[in-house]
Amino acid sequence: MIATLTGEIKAISLDRAVVEVGGVGLLVNLTQNSAAHLNLGTVVTFHTSLVVREESLTLYGFLTIESKQLFEQVQTVSGIGPKVALAILGSLSPEELATAIASENIAAIERVPGIGRKGAQRLILELKGKLSDLSDGARVSSHQPIWREQLTNALISLGFAPKDSDRAITTVVTELQGEGIEPGDLEMSELLKKALQSGGRK
Image (cartoon, rainbow, N blue to C red; front, side):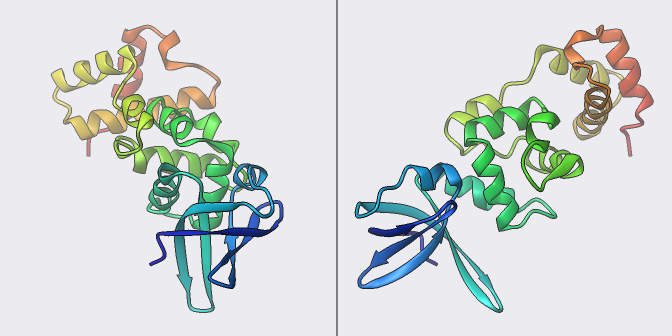
């Protein structure tokens, strides 16, 4: 596995660069934002992720270790490969993605090219609470809105398991945001009613 590489920038395009390392030019795929920060002739260190396929070896490069970790982590979500993962990082910083997942902001995530609404919902469902190692994102993802904490406590007191309450709340949030309604704008009694109707228990 190639974890990092340091070399001179020999060529730059919109979303990739050629980096000369020991006389060999390596093609590194980048986000457009990263490519925009590069200059020809400068020596740069990239944190890299090597994606191995039967017909190809593809290098993806990042200017921070947090971005590389996030790139690899979002690919653990079903249906998300390296190209979509790179598009996510090109649209959202690690902190912005952690915030969007923690607050279940589907709209922010579905703006990423190629992900769509279902992909955004899957990303939230599978990564919620798992971004604890992404520096600033950790502090964001560990914080829940007050209304969500109150609703979780109410459901648990009614016999829901923590996992079931989380599933029910996620369903309610998805439905409300689809209607353009912020959950925090509703009364707790209304949120509880919707969560109970969602049938979160398995």
